[in-house]
Image 1 (cartoon, one colour):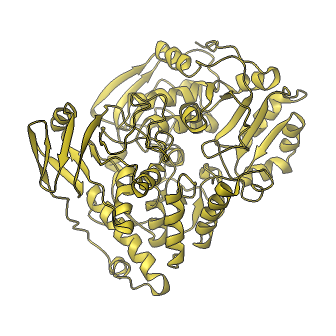
Image 2 (tube, rainbow, N blue to C red):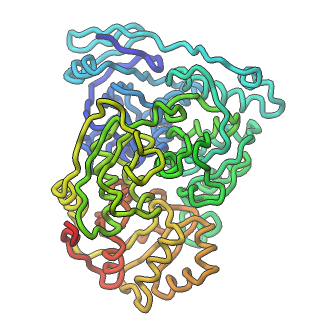
Amino acid sequence: MNASSILGGTADGPIIATVEPLSFWGGVSPSTGTVIDVHHPLHGACLTGAILMMPSSRGSCTGSGVLLDLILTGRAPAALIFSEAEDVLTLGALIATEMFGKPLPVLRLAPESFAALSRAKTARITATSVEADGMTLPVIPPRIATLDLSDTDRAMLEGKEGKQGLAIQQAMRIICAMAAQQGANRLIDVTQGHIDGCIYASPANLVFAERMAEMGAQVRVPTTMNAISVDHANWQAQGVPASFGDPAARLADAYVRMGCRPTFTCSPYLLASAPQAGEAIAWAESNAVIFANSVLGARTPKHPDFLDLCIALTGRAPLSGVYLAENRRAASIIDVELPDNVDDAFWPLIGYLAGHAAPDRIPLLRGLASAQPSTDDLKALCAAFGTTSAAPMLHVEGVTPEAEGAAIDGAERKTITRADMADAWTRLNSGPEQVELVAIGSPHASLSECRALAAVLVGRKRHPDVAVIVTAGRQVIAEARDDGTLDSLEQSGVRAVPDLCWCSISEPVFPTRTRTLITNSGKYAHYGPGLCNRVVRFGSLADCVEAAVTGRVPARLPPWL
């Protein structure tokens, strides 16, 4: 019965404990410290000043930025205690210590100790112990790094990199600290990066990026950028307040100054630069990471925001997690009861349920091969899985490239039944039949998804009281313009918006009169209520089109259920 210190510090306060992981981005308000995830048991609880206990985090890599902002504004929990490995929030706390001198203790407990402490009402954390309601747990000091660094690594760590020496030194310090807590013994080269921290989730994201840019930081591997929080070229004309639009655009510009490509998409796997099987990359953004590992067979842990830039600046990452073949195997086997004649809504629903069934481990999904999922189906599956699980990948038997023999001996066994699907569908469709907004493109829509929407809408127009918006990457919108798809969509009243996505959209680009929206994204169905403070319905593309044309969609189970 003891506690392992991951990041040192002292704290005391009330204990808030949960057995369900929580994503800070989309799950906790940076402005209040309150849990806004309507699907989480802690919904409505204020975490400020509390000792938060949960198995691990889940969901978005941007949680590190939310936690950093909470720390800098004094709204953070007093301490974090996990029972499993955790990177995203730990990295946010590490940045607060390394760059801003504001430590927040992070500890890890074995399951028995975690269960015992979670029953206490208050706790006090010191450098040597955790004291709570008559219980005392000794604290084991943080692991000391024993990294086998190359001469180049040491030069970067010592700041011997010319004009950008300070930035590279800071980046390497953060990488080495994360490597220590992950148990890595050395670093590896990566071929490319993808930055998630360019979303303006909080002012802390801008403070970090501009500080690194001012130090002369320049990426040394090709690096793409995630969706940002404004339509970069048009936000002023769209009426976005300068108080939000200016810092959001400045954040994007800071990363571009550091050499990142202004791709502004949360679907980097749709770009020509998408990685190949076996390629070691450094991506952040949960859906992108899961798709890259699961579908493309590339290798990248779910790197937290801020660590993504540090790795891009050095070209080096801790050799841990799913960079290692033994950590890519499935510890859970999930048998899926496949209904007949499923449609496109089936795949995000299964991803959402699979994440609940395997919140902390890589699963192998069985029983789906005969449905022959398309690339877009797998995209939706991976994105929804990433909202409810902390795992960086999944396997689908007979479909994904590493599925054969993926399950470890003794893997846990679970089943997703039709009843589970019906229950989840009902929970995601508790809103009214009347809708005012159709939201497509979370993650960013592919060209084939845009074509499918245009084909279903051809010759029809949206209802005058319903807005229909598709978010997509610049390259997809350009391709859709070239082949006539964009013109067809616009004739039906659909608006295509580049750069931002549904998880970063804000008013007035998000239609202010909306009371209820419908989406075909399992990811946005989960995050949407907390992010936009509206009722969110979930359905197939056909359901979305019905809502677009009629302004209503019945609250019913799909035909395949």
